[in-house]
Image (cartoon, rainbow, N blue to C red; front, top):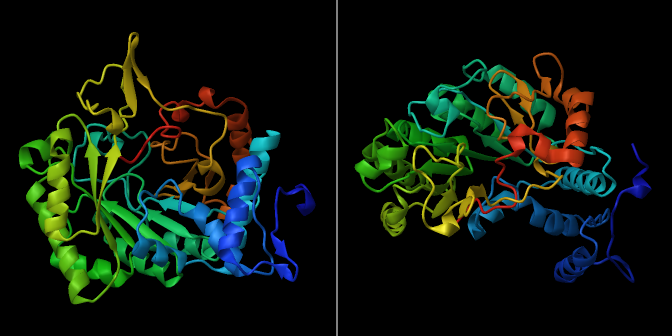
Length: 404
């Protein structure tokens, strides 16, 4: 490891030491980043500065989308000095690695995705879980394994996504695990098709302390909805959304922040304005529009690529359909946001759906041992020198618009 003095960093000072003016510090940071994008702010004597400047980067995590004041205030409330300092180390090691082309890793993950289950009740055409196309085993995350892992990570961990593949509410211990993570003051989020959001589950969801709930609703009529959400029922989704909105009101809770996520594909692109109106009618907190990943985008066999350019990750050219993304030899995810499968495998990111690039097994080693092992370092090094040679990077969303 390089000595701490070589970590790219900057500290803003006034005549009496680190400035106590957050606005001045922010403008200085922004100006410095324009010339030195690898700079990281380190303010050992001022947690105010750390929270402001590091939080600005934390709010751009890949799992995030649009800014919402109430949600982001709640998110920032999860910060501690230790989590800010950990994020600083992680940011520094990423930029240092990017700059020197030598893979180094300081700190522990800022965010993780934990898979509650691979099982799903739907048959969505671009989802390995829906297609039953996994080569890895299917199963349910065990509560004791989850708590043991969180016990190793919670002091540094800021953000936890209860999702990778599958429908989280199929795991009978899912909300108990959310409660445990919430008790550790970690920001928690999940994504659901809402078919199991009964009145009882809605109430338990609010009581669990879940911070963000994404409800997938890809159509405003059954005919359109079922074209992507094969086997799904729109009436169940709408009733589930009403149940969670009502539970929040009854329990006088500000959380979870409820989002309608509309995956824009060709069959539903004409219902964009309609889903906005539906979200307002039901009372969800926001409606987000997500661009779709299409595996075989060159032929698009399911005719999913939308005609509205802003909602597509792909574009047509004289030679055929191409991916809009600009894949470069860097990846922030690999330094801060690993994926843990239900059975304890550590995958590099959410694009490795089948965990083919296994970087460790938490049934055999602690997370820290896996995070700092030779396999992880070798994968980061490979990425820094030739990302186009890594199969899971070919259709990565980096460099293209994920949210419309």
